Image (cartoon, rainbow, N blue to C red; front, side, top):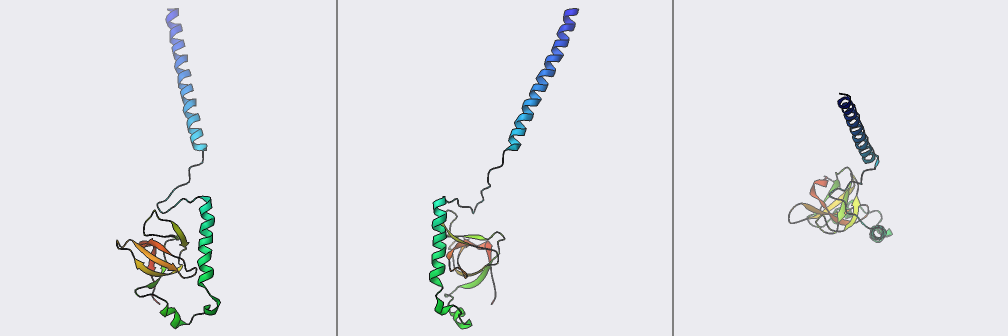
Length: 157
């Protein structure tokens, strides 16, 4: 009888030890998982560039701006503005709140050539054959590139 009582008490103590050990292990696991910072989210229109490409990108963006704005035509007249639009082109603005990336080709995997912010004025030059992308020129920087159709809207003059 004494032996059975001893086995019962030892069994309960062993069960308590196993439950406590398991609880501590699970607690430490979740504590460690929640203390790590999450990885940076990647979105569909993100194009990770190496650090060397960023410096080349800035040079590329700066070059067209300096060459495209000669001092002689700094203040075009309204008739000149109307004449500078190519046939079939129209004015628009960016409607995507975070701004858009401009691509060299009308696809998601092509190189990023620049960007445009919310409500920035653009000139829509052409549309891709699949009608998903539009080629635009940013009026302020004269950078041309492709962006998705849903990111912009036509503005009336």
